[in-house]
Image 1 (cartoon, rainbow, N blue to C red):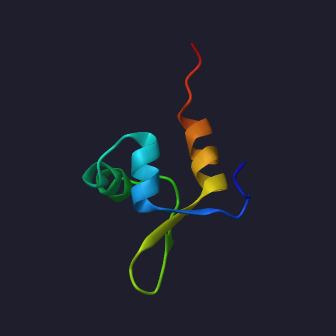
Image 2 (tube, rainbow, N blue to C red; image 1 turned 90 degrees about the horizontal axis):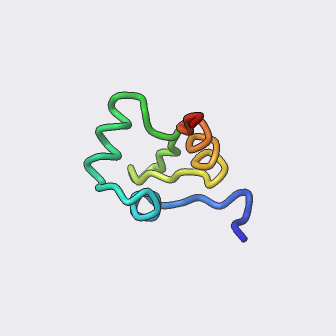
Length: 62
């Protein structure tokens, strides 16, 4: 079970979504990616809760 404060690396998010890093950056540039935390060294982290919230917004009713 994931901790509520878990922060994922960009590589972990891309692997989970099965997308390339360039796709993630494209989504981010278009404002369509989950919110990110930018660390002082430039690395990105995504909160697990934010990723789950973002995925919920992507769901479509069948």
